[in-house]
Image (cartoon, rainbow, N blue to C red):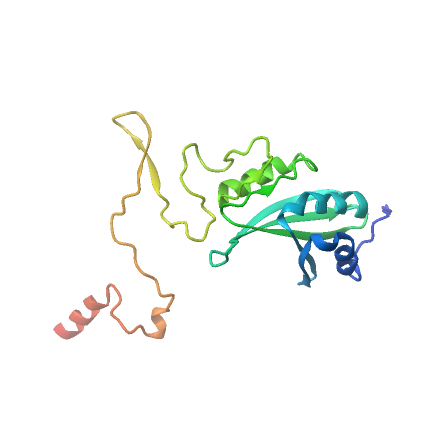
Amino acid sequence: MTVLHSAPKFASNDGVLDALVAVLGDKVIASHETHGEVVITVARDSIEDALRTLRDDHEYQQLMEIAGVDYPDRAERFEVVYMLLSLTKNHRIMVKVNAAEDAAVPTVTTLWPVAGWLEREVYDMFGVVFAGNPDLRRILTDYGFEGHPFRKDFPLTGYQELRYSEEEQRVVYEPVRLAQDLRQFDFMSPWEGAEYILPGDEKAANEGGAK
């Protein structure tokens, strides 16, 4: 059975970047095409208007995902990435905004109600605040969780640990207590020959001397 659809099986990027940048005008901060993807960075305060234009005038009807990225060395350390799909053109683009820890990003729940859940994920994992989101609560971590796990300066051990207490007959939260010091990894393979004695090697040396 042959299925016919108006959307092309393979969509081309030819002319797409230039056309969209021209339409968005001074809302655009940067734009490029990489790895076959069209990426447009817009001013943070213009994100709602930019996405509305792409949705209503250029057929990018569906918001597929909102993701966060953390670059701790930047003044505006976070990127919020909106991934849009055109069902009629079978084409995808990415739109980005930059945000600092104290700079809120306007919500796009006014355009796509599903953005409420997606913005909550980015808020929970990165700490990015979305101004105007009607229900900006944590969605993946537990009640009372401290910090934001996807930040690159978040400790690998976290801040709290939980265990079941036989005495209290419930799960209790406690500050993380490490049974031993964390090893400082230098990502060097032991097979390449480290310049220091690896744990356990001293035993082999002693056994060799005894023989």
